[in-house]
Amino acid sequence: MTRSAGLAGLASLIADPTRAAFCLALLDGRAWTVTELAAQAGVAASTASEHLSRLVDGGLLIERRQGRHRYLQLAGPHVADLLEGLAAHVDPVAEPRPTLRGSRVSAALALGRTCYDHLAGRIGVAITDAMADKGLLDLANGCALTPEGSAWLVEGLGIAPNRLRDTKRPLGKACLDWTERRTHVAGLTGALVCRTFIDNAWLKRIGSGRAVTPTPSGTEALRGLLGITLSAP
Amino acid sequence: MTRSAGLAGLASLIADPTRAAFCLALLDGRAWTVTELAAQAGVAASTASEHLSRLVDGGLLIERRQGRHRYLQLAGPHVADLLEGLAAHVDPVAEPRPTLRGSRVSAALALGRTCYDHLAGRIGVAITDAMADKGLLDLANGCALTPEGSAWLVEGLGIAPNRLRDTKRPLGKACLDWTERRTHVAGLTGALVCRTFIDNAWLKRIGSGRAVTPTPSGTEALRGLLGITLSAP
DNA sequence: GAAACGGTTCGGTGCCCGCCGAAGTGTTCG
DNA sequence: CGAACACTTCGGCGGGCACCGAACCGTTTC
View 1: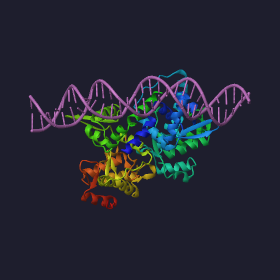
View 2: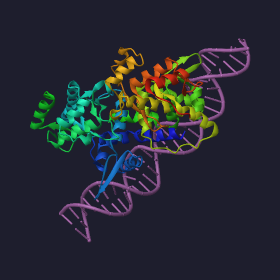
View 3: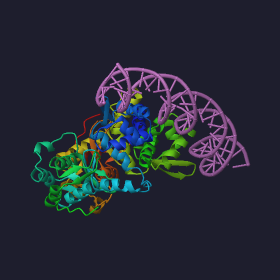
């Protein structure tokens, strides 16, 4: 009885279209302000403020107050997993008709973007496929990291071995992409790969958005490490 | 925009306490009638009927009409995964104070039960732990099935190798148990193990409920195959 | 200090939805 | 055939909540 109330309470946080829009926007892992989110969802700032307070109270978001701004972001990888899991079960929805300006934006997003703390888009899928081909990931097992995969992260990417001993998070985890309709690697492995690529300046963010694009050294690294050559957009 | 509406629509199906109670009851994988679910949730049959129609329309449940009965069950493993994922994120809730009759029922459930199509409770956790100890599962990787695990399913449990080539479902998958607060193996592996134990009459259902208990031959099989000796309840 | 800005609080409005009981349909059983 | 049963449909009631604009508070800028 009380258990169903808890489940319903959690679901009701996401059951409003405006709050759902906030959650989807925040899935890029960055921190947004109240006004930005209000504009994104098309509601008044007062409405957004109330919704966001509910999401914070419900534990889905955390807030960081700074001057006259209030920055909001997802409360952690578990929330991102939760939202991804839900979003993956939404039946294939009618795509909004493409606009001229919209298609340029979505072309950049389709090439590569952050999905919370890992990579998605064509780049994310290509990395996943290449790692699976080399026996580093086991796609039949929910993108599990193989022993060879652990070794590759350490020797190929230069990740400290103790970084792989996260007690809570699964090493490899499948995340369903909604532009490619393909799974790509998330979990601790996805986060470490993304972080390495950004830290090494192999990928850089476009503007203030979540889209990312390879730098020249990144294009080289993708080919050298994984044999990936991205086709033109 | 339309994407957030889809996400909100899916969440709103679970956002009602009565519908959430239905979903939790159906998580045992069996088919229930409208009247049974209405009694379980404490609402009128007419109310339950309307709720259940919504859940069917939303794709979470499927129905099978048979005579004057309407049997309802989860639409598939993906729905069970979805609900498990949500339920796992509900913050540790105040346990309902135990009643005398209730404690006997929950003792049986705590020992062993079906959780959709795999095993949960102390039996489910014990099997998972034993398989991990023998190197058949990789707990750090989301309960992924190792190559040794595949071989064990075929040679130890007598499962046909082609049964392991399910294109869609992950082989191993972690499922969080809410009585043990421990992960246990789900996914295709969990389903095959559960099915083998039931088919071999190593476990039998208690009454019409979802609780299961080992038979004498099952106690023997648990010790012989995995070295498991269950302590008294 | 004044003006601009980001955010919050507060009334008020309208809509949606969960609930029930009563009446109706179809099935089973005697 | 009639009674019991499982379920559905309908009307009506009540509560909750998403939304907005206006007023207000604190910060930044000029």
